[in-house]
Image 1 (cartoon, rainbow, N blue to C red):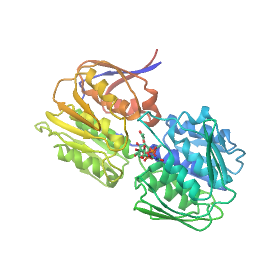
Image 2: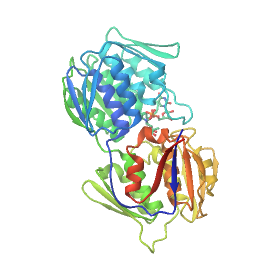
Image 3: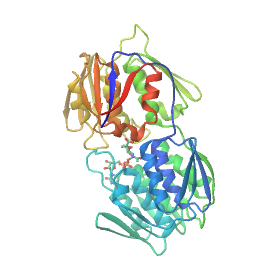
Image 4: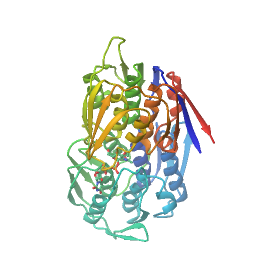
Length: 419
Ligand code: EPU
């Protein structure tokens, strides 16, 4: 079993380069299954979620090859429309094969996906889309079977804002006859990135980034080149790590606009944030005393749920009572038990966590219960006095490229050991 051994009491300083966005990459790669030509996809993070998606695509007859951080994808010889449980269980994003294969083959059989355990993760909105586009959808033997002799356009109003269902709808509707209209959609930067990728391959998707997306179906998507946007959450993680360790970090290769909800919250807490064209400097002045804060997670442009555990690690270092309200996932506070083992004072009640900050943290044996929880524990371990041992780091490696190298280049003392 691999572990991170983290020596604490460091102040992170220096520069870090952000990789391509995980949640864009894991959607854009399945989207490439719709393309009848060669796609050159640049700025792809080499993380285990992406490696698993590539493995699924290769197993279905696609030719997907790395050239540095670029993937050359040729899906012209796809010979299957089925994703097995062995593959699907490894990551949540395997559900994007439903929309992509339905668009491409008119049918798909995809085992129900795995991914981080954040409470119930229904896919009713995805199924509603496929049915609206004319597919029959059934669940048999643990797999979702979709079948549509022909895909027709539809007008769909989502019951709640869902990143996955919005993207799956764009994938399937790209090849449906006529104009599909999606209302109450997700506006996350990675949703816009998928739309831009599809358009660069010949699709006709408009309105991504607003509440309504319109997709005019096309007969064929040709090949082309596309570069994935920088990862908003990876960037936010290093920004918060800089603040929690009272450091000074230049976070490079970011889109500052995507970071506004995080930059704004850090400024509110007294952290220095300077924005440049494609980088952000985050620093804490020596005499600065950070202020407690309240965070409520919400779909973009609100505060991202995928940043709340890292934000909790910062709040633990700030005197006074901070509060986090989690509005997206029913169960995303399991990491607080780990922070409490380090000396943090946190009370969870329903959707809220009250954090009594300022108590000293000490290193401890810790368990990364999901991807972002793991990131929060790394931050807390960098702050704490002494040594922490973080288990289940596979979760962290699902979503953070070269995490040990990047943190250590900023002055962290993290060692990965294999026991
Ligand atoms: N929901 C439904 N029915 C559905 C779909 C969603 O009820 O059919 C609910 C969910 O239970 C949740 C809310 O709607 O309460 C939002 O879920 P969403 O569909 O937006 O989440 P997702 O697409 O499964 C993606 C990211 C998550 C991120 C969420 C929210 C990927 C692969 N995953 O999940 O990322 O937390 O959006 O922004 O893009 C992570 O990267 O650590 C991660 C968990």
